[in-house]
Amino acid sequence: MKAKSRVVVGLSGGVDSAVSAHLLKAQGYEVVAIFMKNWEDDDDDEYCSSRQDFLDAASVADVLGIEIEHVNFAAEYKDRVFAEFLREYQAGRTPNPDVLCNAEIKFKAFLDHAMRLGAEKIATGHYARVRENEGRFELLKGLDDTKDQSYFLHRLTQQQLSKTLFPVGELRKSEVRRIAAEIGLPNAKKKDSTGICFIGERPFREFLNRYIVKEPGPIKDENGRTIGQHQGLSFYTLGQRQGLGIGGVKRKGRENSESTRDRASSGSGDHEPWYVARKDLEKNTLWVVQGHDHPWLQSLALDADDASWVAGAAPREGEYGSKTRYRQADAPCVLARDANGAFHLDFPQPQWAVTPGQSAVLYDGDVCLGGGVISAKA
Image (cartoon, rainbow, N blue to C red; front, side, top):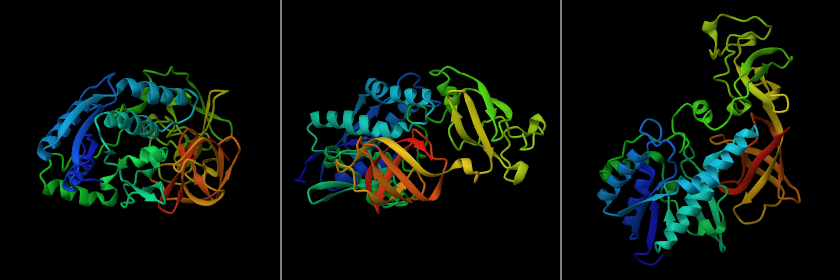
């Protein structure tokens, strides 16, 4: 990069993007910050903290001596991300809006806006890395494996990666916080955000109730015995343990007092906790089982569609590592492709609670190859 080339940083109000901006400025780039507002429906301080986040981002920009612009992408977010989010939930699947948000907003709408500002690159605070290899761009895991976010970035294209920098991808989180404190950033100790951007930390079912009609139905165990009532299949996900309302129901049919409901017992046999194992949309039935290792929760294969590959083409068939949910360790798998762009994964070891709507992401060591949306499991 030539001296003083312009980089536009997505400054979120968090410490990771703040340190990213600092590192780029220290490297001699002309750094401009953008704060993205992606949600408006009920932007209040209790759950959706965009006002406070912008104040934090503006404070960081002031300390670093860089310009900051407030940009509203709420309309694009609603059309490109939230509408798909609702469609998936209404279809009984469990989508990952952060994956779609990265592909459609942070590395599309934001990237386009930054280019109009004369940027040569954009940068974010994601824990990932980009490497150019023989003219192609590779997406790598962040060096801090406890914070790696390549799973959420697997739909990025060659064009997007060619314009992207991840300054903290080479650092551990502890080092990022140390740098923030050292240079006096006001958000050095700010708690990491864990909620989906438009939901925040609010009760999820309460939020979804506003947009999806409740259709209660039976909760059944593996023997077909009705042991409770669900509030609508959209409100549950495979592997879910909390909020089922059947914590006091025993496998053999005895029901305990109300005070035991929803108690997550860690015992064995009749006292093992209940988990969501299947959703039957046709019969509006939620199937649950007792025990984390129940066979209904284990899968040796999955199918995925809507594939997106970082290199622009699918990798060869063969053995890889994979994640079927964020934060899990890479699981060995064998990839088989079909002619329609979908793919199939076989696992030598059972995978727990493989969930349609979530992403199956492939890795070759530290290199994230891309992935697709899980459509079925076996």
